[in-house]
Figure 1 (cartoon, each protein chain N blue to C red):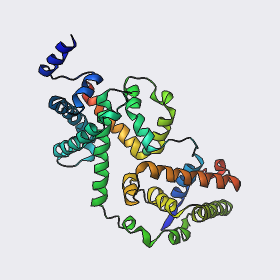
Figure 2 (cartoon, each protein chain N blue to C red):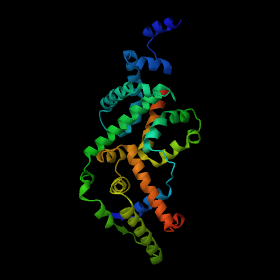
Figure 3 (cartoon, helix red, strand yellow):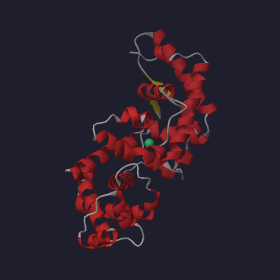
Figure 4 (cartoon, rainbow over the protein chains, first blue to last red):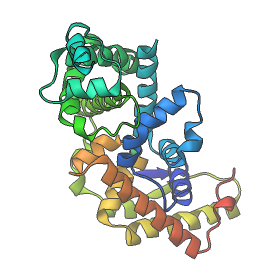
Length: 78
Length: 218
Ligand SMILES: [Zn+2]
């Protein structure tokens, strides 16, 4: 397997952007319903729950679930 | 007054408040509450999942709603009231659907590599080579040095499990849900495993005086 510059760059970036206080997927999921409602009410969810926002930026699958949740909630809201 | 509401509820099946929903979904659950929630989940799941499902969206969404309903009814006592109950329920349904899609995608794919992970691992990471063509030899040398440091940390400071996880997630770009299942763990534990690995690499690179600002800025 050849490791490309892109991969190593990604890895080093991910390493240097790491923080002690990151939350995991479990805690993010626990708070996702509240986070999504704040967002839909036009309040700053990111400001109110920065660790959730941080996790969503780092974790592709949680972000995908969050975006799908917003889509679903918008559809049933009207 | 309270009795009047209770009686009225039986005729008027529209659940609105969290209190009403919790009462309706707690065992023994009211069939009307379950049906109303199922309807809502299906109406939400369709637009949320349509871009991931290429055929038989209706059937898929109905199955997901059914599986999610069982989870919701089982866990209704863990709902902490931090949102509308229906938002909480939708969250469970959306995750159910996406998890199922990730599994399916993996089953349909031909990623043999990760299915037999014990054949490789340490050896392969040791032999990784860095494909780069840089015009400036000095810069190239600097990058090679950083790469060697990173590879040394990966191979010597991380655990076998951490290496396996990072390779699958960051180099092969596999789904975390699938990797977690293959490794006999869950996504949360996998995240923590990789988080610890990232911190270790960061701390070690800092110890060795590597400045991230000067890295690969072209
Ligand atoms: Zn996550």
